[in-house]
Amino acid sequence: MAEDKAEPGLVFHPLDQFIVKPLFGDGPVSWYTPTNLTFWMALALLAIIAVFVFGSRGRAVIPSRLQSIAELIYGFIYKMVEDVTGKEGVKYFPYIMTLFLFVLFSNYLSQIPASYSPTSMIAVTAVMGFGVFIAVTILGFVKNGPAFLGLFWMSDAPAILRPVIAIIEVISYFVRPVSHSIRLAGNIMAGHAVIKVFAGFAALTLVSPVAILGIVAIFGLEMLVSGIQAYVFTILTCVYLNDALHPSH
Amino acid sequence: MEGDLAHIGAGLAAIGSGAAAIGVGTVAGNYLAGALRNPSAAAGQTATLFIGLAFAEALGIFAFLVSLLLMFAV
Image (cartoon, rainbow over all chains, first blue to last red):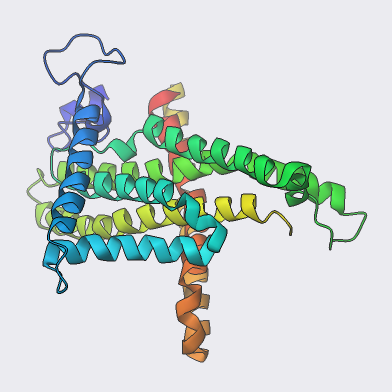
């Protein structure tokens, strides 16, 4: 955006923050290069380990604050898995808990200014989304055999409509991993880009108070969105898992 | 000059955000109306609420993605 450089306000590009850069020097990025992406993913993992190892170390009857956080997160996700997928789904609780914690912690860590948000990278969320999709599809066929295809065949619909509905159901089934991953990445990317756009306006003296208030408001909204998107990603995983375990419509 | 047309397209794609806002408002408003009529049943439906919000919002995000692609990729 060459013409933006000429204006006084926008001296940086709002999407510059999503560029994956090597952490040391600026060579080419290979799969083993430590980049800002891997750095913030590692930080998210360290934060998760810190909360859960130190939180569960005391095993106090009256929990400390950290222990309360760890117990609340655990109980919340456990109840969600149990409610949505039933008793059979509890076996897959560790996987869902892992996904939730990674998304939640990297969302919240990315709210630190000048950080990089791993969940805004579509490659990261696509791996998680397609991982869920492939796992759930295989699980459905292993658990139910060919009866899993009953997911696409609405037996209580009128007979003429059933093939049409089946086609729509198949399409919507295959769109699932795409929307699952783009929803998360798009939400986080949109929020961060909007903050940067407001930050660009803050340099103009005339609108800077409005822009700074806007940054504060959007930041508050982003704190909400971070939690909600982690929750939505997890509950959709539970819903897909439930479809695989109980395919009958 | 083709960049200008792409920018117009990006602006048109941003209408999708408003459409998603209507969808999200419908979901949340209907949830609230139902929850006020029968508060005891409301707690059990928050999961459904969030799934509905997510589906409505995802389409707005798709519109945002289209406009980003038009702005920076085309």
